[in-house]
Image 1 (cartoon, helix red, strand yellow):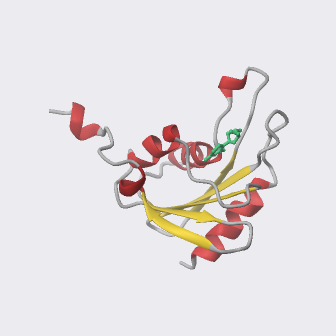
Image 2 (image 1 turned 90 degrees about the vertical axis):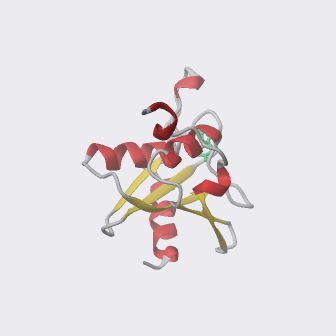
Amino acid sequence: MDYRELLKKAKDAKENAYAPYSGFRVGAALLTAEGRIYTGCNVENASYGAAICAERAAISCAVSRGERRFEAIAIESNGEGGTFPCGICRQVIAEFGPDIKVIVGKADGDFRIYEIRDLIPHAFTAADIIK
Ligand code: THU
């Protein structure tokens, strides 16, 4: 699939961001191995620590629908240079496989592609706890 299309879905999802405290709006679009797309946005809370990031919102949405196999996640925000997933989101993305692509969209329409294995080296995974 054309990652520009996935980035467009992330941009659309960003419109639903609930970010009254930070003003930082984020949208994510998650592509499954079968080509389905699930989106999420950040959802903040008056109890700041209760906020959920767009990436995890998208993953929760997909997993809740029975999805487990993911190919890529695209991220758009109102930050200029593009937004990388936070540490918690990197951990959550890595749960579903080391070769998931992370597509970081920039304000000028350009984007960069990474693999989650490179964004969270030596990730703690199921292999570390399942004997
Ligand atoms: N945020 C995301 O949704 N994804 C990221 O990758 C980075 C941070 C959100 C969390 C919070 O609502 C706001 O951005 C500021 O940290």
